[in-house]
Image (cartoon, rainbow, N blue to C red; front, side, top):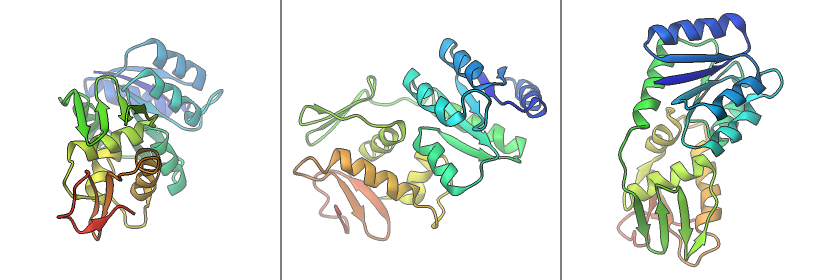
Length: 231
């Protein structure tokens, strides 16, 4: 597995490179935003460890370009420890967010989890009512209209569609989509569902995303057996 570390602090960068190589990963290190972005776009990496504060171009600016390239795993590793920063990173499409100072053991465990997800097999196509999700092309349509989604919106929809008819808890959704433990003070799941609804449900007559009271959310066009609503 090949990892790119984009980190401007020399000591931290060398520490990460050495430790990850000892963990049997192939590792490249970039110390500026432009160098890191160039390396990521011109090489095939399984995962990028990305700092936010970088010279030239910061991590917030790099993240959308990485998502445009494809399904590359991205883990933010940064001293930006505010909840708003974490939410911003995840909403931009990062697969995980770890705050400095950090445990190297925890970092490696998170990397292993993300890379295992990358090889999971999936169906090529899902259809629920008039919504179609093409996994191979990462294309979503409803009533034949293509719907543009961010990476996290796509992953959230993908999870809901795969588990259609089930009541999924916020804890499960946070774990599967953001690789994070759900905190009752964190509304990242509810905010993401609201934004997904605006694209998937609001323009159409029949809602597919349903709120299950005291549990979380479910997906489908006939969920009368679940206690909830499509609010």
